[in-house]
Each structure stands twice: as C-alpha cells, then as structure tokens.
Length: 177
Image (cartoon, rainbow, N blue to C red; front, side, top):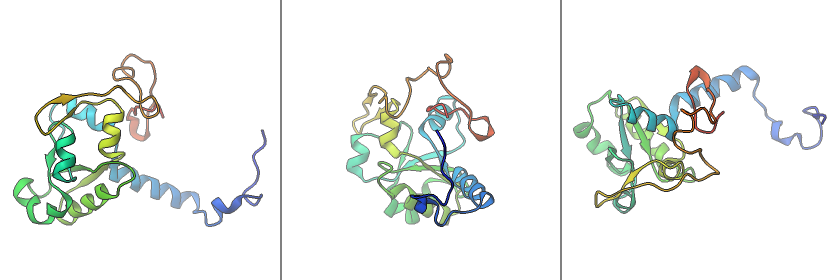
C-alpha cells in the first residue's frame, strides 16, 4: 500500500495542519488535563490516590450510578460549594456522563477557577461502566457490568500479560496503546 502525499485528493483533513512541534505541545497539554478510567481505577485500588473524584452530574444520574468514593457536586454548585467540601489546592478528577457531553469540561473549568489542579475523566461515567469497573447506586448497591469488548479488556488481563502497552511516561493503558 502506498501512502499519498499531503497535497493529494482528500487533503482537506490537513488543509490547516499544525507543524509537528505545535502538535506535540497540544497533545502534551491535552494529556496533562485528562485521565482515563483504567488509570483512575488503578490509583483508587492502590489506596490513597491523592485526589478527590467528583461526579458533576445531577442527582438522578448520581442515583443511577456513580464511581465508588466519588463526591457528588453538580457543576452548577461547584463555585459556591467546592471550598467547603474540598480544600483549595487538592487535586480533583471530574466526570460527567459520557464523551458526548461537555459537562466534565465545564466542571473541570470551575475547579480550576477555584484553585484546584484538575483532570477530566475521559469517557465519563459511561466508559467507567463500559470498561467493567464497579459502580455504586444511590441506594448503596454495588454493581458491575461485563466489559464492553469495544471499549476495554477484561480486568486483570494486563497483569496477566494478555494485552497492554505503555503510554508516554510508562503508564499502562487498557486499550494496549
């Protein structure tokens, strides 16, 4: 298979391409601002993760399911209530429903404005569940769905050497990339 040069038909994708250095800066900054379910789950399982995880969705969504140990603080309440619940400067990981929602981004902005180092959980609660991690419901019940084969690998497979890879900095990620 031969790859076409950038000026070939369909080059619209790269019509306004950044140079490699600009792309490297952008992706480094993006990685600094986000985390994923496998990394969060690993740190939570290891004990004191050194951050507070915040569910920024409404009460109904929280009651349907949330990450165990998460603090429920809807985005619209962060500016008013964050300081009373989380000491300024405490690292925070925020999530909303899914990658189709920008609620996690809005919540991350509110925490940053309030003086917190903050990361957004990529994929939100949807991908937490789809990757097979345990979740809790409003009645205190604990649940886990099977891993969705399109989004993750079976828990424990990385440790068994079945798949996996290392991201920048050596962090292992569930998709094996």
